[in-house]
Length: 402
Ligand SMILES: *Cc1c(COP(=O)(O)O)cnc(C)c1O
Image 1 (tube, rainbow, N blue to C red):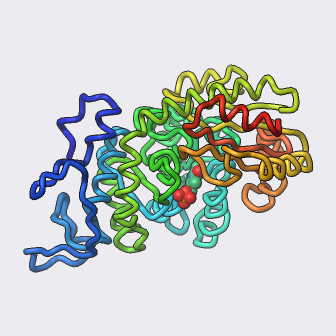
Image 2: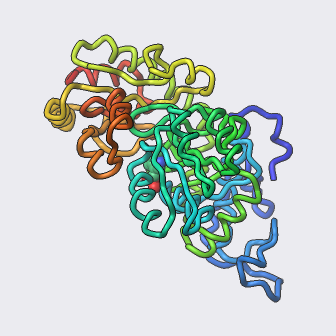
Image 3: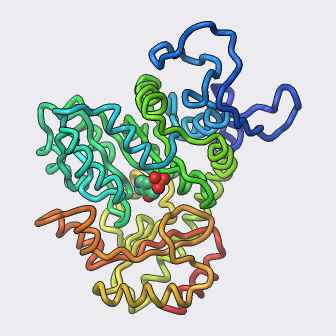
């Protein structure tokens, strides 16, 4: 699909992959194809099982030119054979689980993960008869010990939302391979620029493209990148049968945002490094977690595994009452940073995440797993997504409350 771009740089690839000037009008920018169906000269073939590789467009639930453009850009940057874009990051996670797991299978899921994924694994998957183990993925012996004869999938997330703990992908992929299981990784925090997930051994690279890939906070979407055979299975299951497709309009907007992803990630990293270093000088801040800081508990792994340490900072501010009171001050006083969930946008965003509340609703950790979480998060963290504003303006804004 994009052979001519293989040896080009990431910035060139992000702009040109999946796009060609319109053959009829000569338009340089991609046209938006809001068409649910496509005129065909094929007489038969209406089942997902009849779908041929590189078949012409037939119906929008199977494929759409704008969605294919975005899929081409993501697979190009991830270095994978193919990619599928779906309605949201949660649709992408659901697609991985429901395509590769059946009743009686076993999956190992990171004990800390995006809250929606944590709840999906603990509630929905178990209800469907899938065995689920939740494991601290930074503890390799715990991952090995969790393997069972029916383990089909290991699902991790690195850096993990919201605490910024890392998974050693090479080490976990070796464990997965030894068990004959697939390794999927939610790389939303890292973006395709943050780590070479495929080279590190990940079979299924998942993104909430709502975040860095779209980058502008105006469209929700998800993606899974990997080998053609695996992505084809997801397309049959999740797009054609479950119907969780991405709208062409969202794909068009997200592809436009993605053209500047390599440039944006450099700026996110520069801004986050400046703000993280400033936060470390503030006496009121108890602890700052950022993979680009020497104080990160896995700094050595971050240096080895990450090419860009991204824009996500986590910091502790004392107990839950202190955190909530400070969150209220932020709501009242911050003028540039928005107090809001989500991340990876050009606008900076901050949100308080109390440990006790997250444990009750999503993670439900105890013992050593809870202790590891608390070593990163204490009683709670502010999750700060550094946008593309001038770092000195972000620091001045935050200095009003910190
Ligand atoms: C936001 C997010 C998701 C879910 O993505 P949606 O697009 O909101 O469905 C999954 N994983 C991570 C790490 C996220 O940050």
